[in-house]
Each structure stands twice: as structure tokens, then as C-alpha cells.
Length: 123
Image (spheres, rainbow, N blue to C red):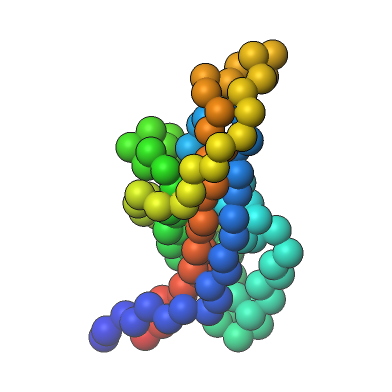
């Protein structure tokens, strides 16, 4: 018996860290933005899952300084599922304004983009 993975939904989002220059913050905000307005009744009504942790959630994020991303913090944004995260170099760096009271290290604002794919396994 072969198990096949089928995609149910792909959502995209964008996140920004205007102050602090933390790519994890930008990445987590992008994932949160991607899932912010979703309801997935098809997971139960069509796919027949009995528990939301049965769905597979694959996240791909493009952000400046990807090696600095704390993956567990980004995945913590997702409430359910068997989660994986791929981080790659991308997004954008935009010149902002450093404000010492906000712990800015420099004038950079970091922008991240994310794609969140929900899959199910079927026989």
C-alpha cells in the first residue's frame, strides 16, 4: 500500500522586523501573516483527519541572514501539524532609521516572505 501526500492549501505571507534587525522576528511574522485568516474544515470534512496534528505543514521562508533564524521560534507560530521549516536567503533589506531606545543595531529593516503548505497523507 502506497501512501501519497496531497496538498490541500498553500498560503503566502510577509513579515517585517522594523527595529531590532532579527530575521527570526520577520520570519515568524511572515508565517503568522500567511495563516492569519485561514479555516481548514476540509482537513476533517474532506480529508477525514480526526486530529489536527495529523496534517503535514511545510513552511518555506526567504529572509535576509537565514543562518540567524531560530527555527523552533518560527515553527511555534503554527498551532498544529507535523511541521517542517526550510529557510533560504531572500526577502529584502530596506533602509529605515535606527532608534537606540528600540535596541536597533543599525538602520536595516528586514522583510521576509513565507509559503505555508498543508498536506495530508492518503492511501
